[in-house]
Length: 123
Image 1 (cartoon, rainbow, N blue to C red):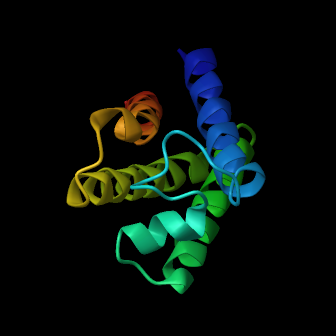
Image 2 (cartoon, helix red, strand yellow):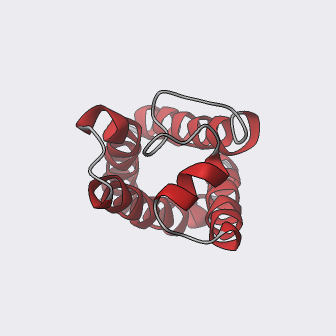
């Protein structure tokens, strides 16, 4: 079970880092509304630019914590819980602007990953 949780930690961390570091200014099929970049996506949700940077900082920090959690398990539960809350917020934003369900799939997948991490780390 430990190996599965570790794989989930690395997968979640790399997925978030991919979105927030490598694809921040790039178009993806999962951007909210008609947004081409992350900043446009937050604008589509009616959120200010500074909020995008705050959320990005939290997601990047939590991603690093998930990787660090391979050696320092004490950080895994808070990092996974934070990501879970942020994913619930992402799902709410997609619903707010009535995005098609497929645009919510990455957030839903990430939520399931962190639920798995939490289940394996708390139990």
